[in-house]
Structures are given as C-alpha cells and as structure tokens.
Length: 71
Image (tube, rainbow, N blue to C red; front, side):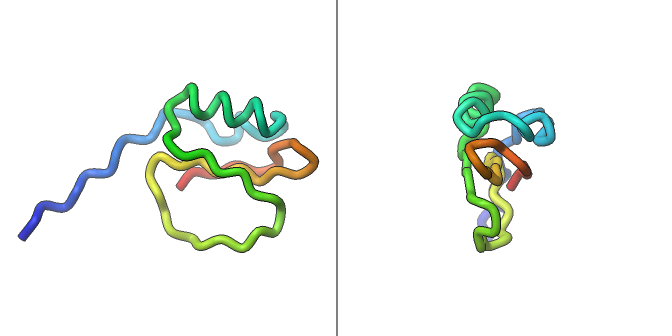
C-alpha cells in the first residue's frame, strides 16, 4: 500500500488580520507570507467545502476583504 502523503505546512498567519484590507493588498500580503493559493470571492458565492492545504480564501465586497478563512 502506498504511503499517505503529508500535506504541506500552512503559513503561520492569522486570517482575521486580512479583514478590512483592500483585496489587492491582502493578496500581496498572503503570497508574501507563503500561501500557495489565494482565492478572492464575492459575497454569497457558492463554493464546495473541500479543505485544501496552503489556500487562503477572501470574501471581497467593494474591493475590501470582509471575511477570511483557510482551506
């Protein structure tokens, strides 16, 4: 049987620190801190709930981050 892969470590970062930033600055900060995938979504977007290590999600309204979560 093949070994179970080890997911990459996530950056040691506080998602709440992104709330209130403009979307462009938030994305630059996230990439600089080591997030491999940065996803910006408008409010109410329907998404699947799969967890992906190394991904940070922003809910963006009027070019400002209103919510942030990892996975």
